[in-house]
Length: 259
Picture 1 (cartoon, helix red, strand yellow):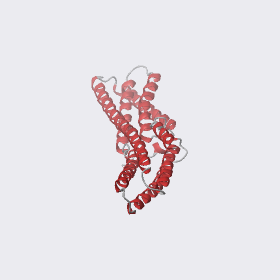
Picture 2 (cartoon, helix red, strand yellow):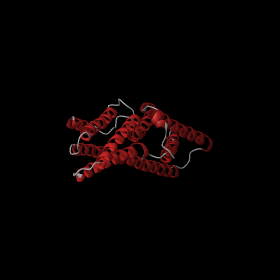
Picture 3 (cartoon, rainbow, N blue to C red):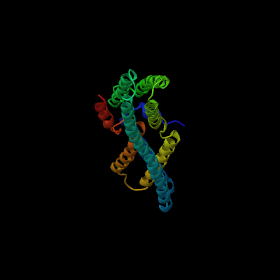
Picture 4 (cartoon, helix red, strand yellow):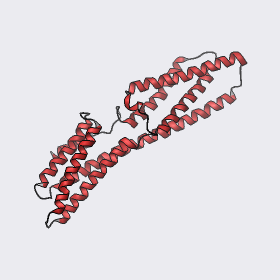
């Protein structure tokens, strides 16, 4: 099952507001049912209800922690692969200085454009799809130069081998970055389980609150906003479209080195 497409379409503030309203609605429903049962059956024992509510909240806390752990591990992987790509580009650029002309100058210009695409993406000047498409075109051109070098009759075969290895490693890093950014996302089944547990847990909390004489809506709003804040961080990390993004300074520094 794919990840929720709504998280890709809607802005984060609408997602936040929608989740807050969902939680408040579930709590209000629980309060309503509790009030109706009190009028019909009178006061009931609290111990079984407290046990059920505690168990459901424990399950909710577990799946929140599990989901948060998935997103933070992906975030760490994205940072790791960014540094790997910076090193791979720099290595390929340095080894390109060892190959004969005209391949040397042309490959360095292609690698320079390769870095420019990543900087434009970091500045949100182009879309991710455009960056991937442009990178694949540059990769094909670099590979054409690599094939031409292999076909040459020259004495420095070891240098060509080093350059070829660096080019292959550069291509592998992009595949890993695409996989982490677009494929290895939180599955839709986990999102469904999370929201089902949220609705059930908040309904039970509302049922418990409804058995009291007074309902403090200010605390209910605070609870809703606190839970939503955690989910918002998870959504932000999973979609990479908000304020929590990998620092691209290493790529900017690389641009200055190879300028």
